[in-house]
Length: 345
Length: 244
Image 1 (tube, helix red, strand yellow):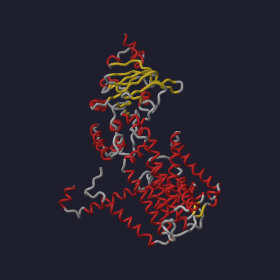
Image 2 (cartoon, chains in turn green, brown):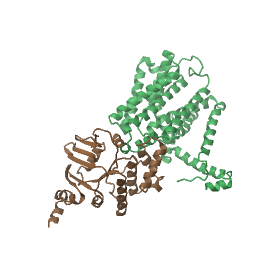
Image 3 (tube, rainbow over the protein chains, first blue to last red):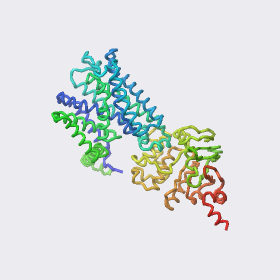
Image 4 (tube, rainbow over the protein chains, first blue to last red):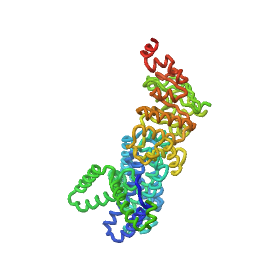
């Protein structure tokens, strides 16, 4: 077991945490709208990927349809706002519950009839496609043009703002919330149970784990959070459309961040988003003149990461952090009183 | 008092009757061995008791309650633990965390689960390996981890599927000692075993099945002399040799 000489195992972690949160709180005042946009998308995709990773990473279910919940969240709040003047915040909760209910039903049926692994993956991959086509062909959902959210008033209540800074803070707190929820789950019985289910479902059952129930709970929480992300995205773009809400590309965008950062780790999906989101936006900006080149670059980076860091970039960061911690503790040991230090040794 | 009472148990796989009208009683506190040639239906019986398979006919009473139709996690909650012939550790987790997952069967609290798991690991002599990854364990240690994990669920009855298979004589000896201690703690053992020496020295009752049918039952010394058993288990040639 690793031994640390000083009794402040969480001191560095707290410093880093406070520093990062402080940095992100003051950062928007130094950013132009373009970089603000990149940061908002980074937070949003960190949030979505973190939420998906509860189902796909921790509980290890091959859930390839997160965009279904993302779209349901966006469309629900938008349609309720447009037709019934219901505040998007309320629509967000309703969308969340709806997304959760649909996600649980989908997984209930799949698990009930024994769809696992790749077959579960196919069922969940095609489900959002069905929704996309339904939305596309029905006028009440706005059809192919989608639905524009009418500009009413720049206020928190209406979830509409003039500048990007409020969106920045909302998305930032959503990301923190998703990390916190996962942190609490990880430190509880359910967290252990999800990992057990991922590793070996039969063994998990033999140890008294109701795998069916726990898989549904993971799906429920994940889908609720994904749906809420959909509402934020709709309010930010002031627009929902079949492709931006139910497009298969969004599924890939969400999952790839987890894979790059580290599937089934607390910060993996967040780190993945911090690498990939700016990369894809900036490379598109720079290489915009050559169509598709930024996607090639994207592909190359993903291949390199999978080749050289198959457990995700997060693992590499973890090692870096461990080294930093050792260094930090060596430094701090000079500050601790000599006799006390000897005692801890 | 009988802990487990099986009557008329039957399971068919297509045209093959894997378990055919088996009756079986296990009294509390004993060590019962289940032996038989390969493919005799031993593991199928375990799978029926632990809820992985559902019988076509018959009843399984555990502490006077019919457990047929319950799911395996419910059966574990009732107090029947099991190990697998091919060990199934959660390889992404450390030894301690593996055992903690078992201990969560009786508690929701992290610290209680850890405390209980550490006790189990100490009991099985795995304490110094508690922070090791699974990949670094030997076969014997993995088998003991499997045992530790199901022991942590606090069962009344433990189904052991060939826990001694693949161990060398020294490791087998250690394991026998461990199993005796587990039994002394009040846990009834029901074990499938191929190593005759192990089973003969441990069990106070042996059940023999062949082609899904129970052919003999009784004290080890009697059962191993039963002509039916010798014929089925060791082959007719062995019996002829004995007769001469």
